[in-house]
Image 1 (spheres, rainbow over the protein chains, first blue to last red):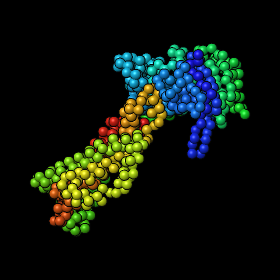
Image 2 (tube, each protein chain N blue to C red):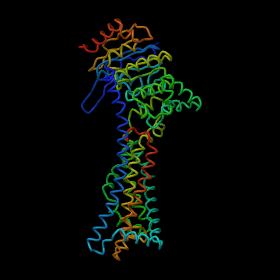
Image 3 (cartoon, each protein chain N blue to C red):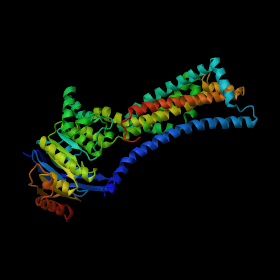
Image 4 (cartoon, chains in turn red, blue):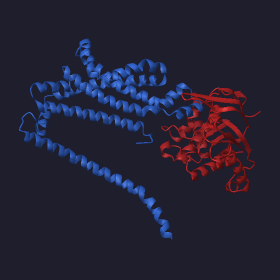
Amino acid sequence: MPLISIKDVTKIYNTERGRTVSLDNVSLDVEQGEFITLVGPSGCGKSTMLNLVGGLLMPTSGQVLVNDEPVKGPGPDRGVIFQQYALFPWLTAQENVEFGLRLQKVPKKERAERAMHYLSLVGLQDFANALPKELSGGMKQRAAIARAYAVHPSVLLMDEPFGALDALTRVQMQDDLLETWEKEKRTVVFITHDVDEAVYLASRVVVMSPRPGRISEIIDVPLAYPRGEEIRLSPEFAEIRARVWRGVHHHE
Amino acid sequence: MTDRKAEPEALTMATPTAIAEDTEKGERSLKGLYVITFFLGIGIWTLSAVLSRNALIPTPIDVVASFAELIANGTLWGHTVTSLSRVTTGFLLGVALAIPAGFLMGWYWLARGLLEPWIQFFRTIPPLALIPLVIVILGIGETAKIFVIFLAAFLSCVLATFQGVRNVDITLINAARVLGAKDFTIFTRVVIPASTPFIFVGMRVALGASWATLVASELIAAPTGLGRMMQQAAQFLQTDRIVVGIIMIGALGFIMDRLLLLAERRLTRWQETR
């Protein structure tokens, strides 16, 4: 049984300028523990797909199942990491991580322990008391990742999380994310428009095409984890990267 | 080769400190300028008062003498306390009602639909325009004045709060929702803190409006208060007293505004931009 099952999902937005078909009859299964990246040009419906799984949007038709249950709304079993970090600016890093735990009525002591555990996991143990404005972009996103991890979701949904970071920080964040992921495996659905990033992180790359949003190709990435520089510079990587590139840029 | 490499690094190292020193220096010279401009202003005032040869234009010395006299006979204290308590009561009542009303309008379309047209309409009327009606109905007692001040404070603060709620970043709300927050929690733990900066802006505008309304309402009809004191002085051509009143109103308004600013700084320290 797949952990996430998207079945014949269509999503139509009715706006003042007319109807936009954001997703057109899309189906996708994601297995437990997989790292999936969704890649495609803007307007291909990748964010819509993520928000449907997250429960922030409802499909016009079709079904989204997580753990065999239809998605009815957002919930702590599906953590979401946003491009704009979305940390609560009035809370410290630790209080941000504790936010979801408080809602689950986790006792104070355990809350602090769990928050510190996940802050250490992303390398922010020394910044527990820092406000978001005192953190760099990369650190903010690390804190957001710790916050999502802390509530123990079975799925992590990441919406271009490194899109606002500079190229060097981005590579570092990719390595750190894989390291975190290998320490505590979660099913990850990760959106990006960066082909390198898509291939480097994923066990499967889902290539999408726009107008209407559809899955045009699914490409397996049979490269072993842990991944590092050798993989990034290997001919196998280059070959898969070329396939994904063609899939994204020559979809017509 | 090594020299050239070191150069840009040295530059980047130097820049932030240089800027910090610059602003520090700038701030120090600004404070110096404040003192200079204060004495300059007093000087111009004295000079023009003396040169005008008009006995009705008081010099700073006349005003200080008048100030001392009003303190000595106890009248200034009484008027000030009355005015302050009116302003505080009206302002606090207005803000206390404006904040929940603004939240309701921002959160529930029903509240918005019912309240917004009235607020938008009354906002265009200066509260002073209501004074004749208020005096007829409520008399010239405390209730009338506090009511007008309340209205002024409420109208300035309610829209700011409403704007604050409308401006809460939707990703923050979504972030709370995906962590398992329901409506009530989102409201108390996200919407309220996120709109605090807007509420403070509203409160500061409300304070200004409260003062303006207070003085005007006291000028029109009141047995006591700073406005009344000035009105009385005007009848006896005691312009020095009028100036004492003006300075008192300015100083009190300024102090209250600074107190609010202090509270705002403490409560919204987390803000990214300053």
